[in-house]
Every structure is written in C-alpha cells, then in structure tokens.
Length: 288
Image 1 (cartoon, rainbow, N blue to C red):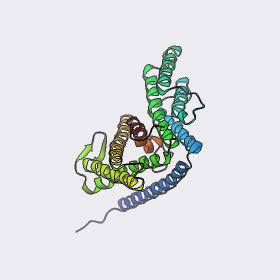
Image 2: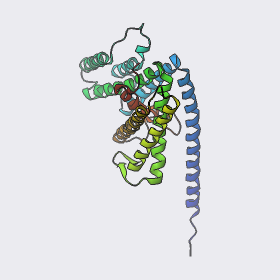
Image 3: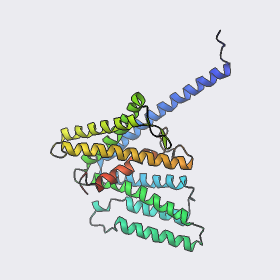
Image 4: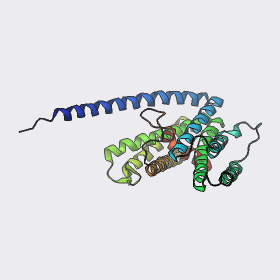
C-alpha cells in the first residue's frame, strides 16, 4: 500500500518545480532580449559595436578581478582596467591614431605591475599582479579581436560566421549530449560535457559554416568553411572548459549576475575570448 507523501514534502516539490520553471522562463527571456540587442549593435558596427565591446571588456575584467578577490579600488586594480581597455580597443581600425603593439603594451603592463609590488612594499604581492596581468591579456586580447574582426573589410560576414558557429556548436553539443551522450569528456572540469556531445557540436558547427559558404562561395570556399567550423567548435569548447576550470578552483557557479539566468559576461563570452583571436592568428579569416 502506497504511503501518502507528507504535506511538507509535496509543498517542497511544488516550490522547487515552480522555481525551476521561473528560472527557465527568465533564462529564455534574458537570452532572447540580450541576443537581439547584441545582434542589432553587431549589424550597426562601427563605434557602436566597439563601444559595446569595451563596456563588456570592462565588466569582464571586473568579474575576473572580483573572482580573484582583488580590492575594488587599488592602484594595481586600476592599472588592470586601464591596460585591459587599451588592449581591447581596435586601434588598427583608426590608422590616424598611433597605438602601441600588444607586445609592447604587455611589457609596459608587466613593468608597471612589478613596480607596484616594490612601491607598495609588497602590499600588492607578486601573485596578485600576476593574476592582474593574466586578466588583462585574457579579457583585453579576446575583446580586441572581436572588435577588429567586425571593423575589418566584410567584417559583418566574418563576425556573423564565427558567432553562428560558436552558438551552433554550443546547441549541437547540448542536444547531442542529451540524446546520445554516454562518455564524459572532462568530468573533473565540466561533468555534464560528453564526447558524443562535443562531436555533435563540431558537426553542427561545420554544417553552419558550410551554409555560409553556399551563401557566399566567392568569399568563403567549401574547404575553408569546413576548417573554420571545426576550429571554432574545438576552440569554443576549450574556452568553455577554461572558464569552468577557473570557476571550479574559485568555488563559484557564475562569474557574475548581470544577465539573469545566464551569469556574467565571462560566462557568456568564454568561447568568444578564445575563438576570435585563434582564427585570426591562424589566418582563417582576413586580417584587419
């Protein structure tokens, strides 16, 4: 004979279901609104898109700094913001502005941060400034290549190609993993990812890239599209795993809460920060 569940248990179950449903609705609404707004500014391009990416870079660095327990107002933190934004700005799109190379800026940042450890008499430690420099390069370079890609010749086409491949890889991996996933890809870092899901994501990303090739064969050949689709999928998954590994070390679920149901900027842009620099460094898309 079935024993009726206690009233408290039933209420708890109903509350949990309602909470999950609300969270899902919130996630969908936030995703749609943010996605439409981002796509509109991406199409506008120019300074509108550059300004948006600089804002995202500033928020991303804030999340990185907070995740590592850095004080909000201290010289080393302020230097981190300054160097991040300098690197993130797409200087090459404005040739009339004389800018330093990334290598030069990185060395100046290194020197300035080392100097802070000396001048502060180790109140800012070597470990702290090392993490600041890591955040500057990780966030600054990633957003720089996103901006420079859009501001280059035929930049809207290449930016859309990369974003669509990233998003289809994520979706393909998720649904393939739920349907066929059995073998864990990297359980110590991200227990929900599967080998089957990763393969599915690569396939769907390549299919998306091939679609761009069919639309504009003179701009993107079939072989070129397949290469981009595969590289974006692998790099995007790596970017996701990098952020998952970092959050696991810090014992946090999300890097921020600016996007309800989606976490912070670094949660949403983890794949972007790796994909855009890599495809340009591999010369898979035109250099700006």
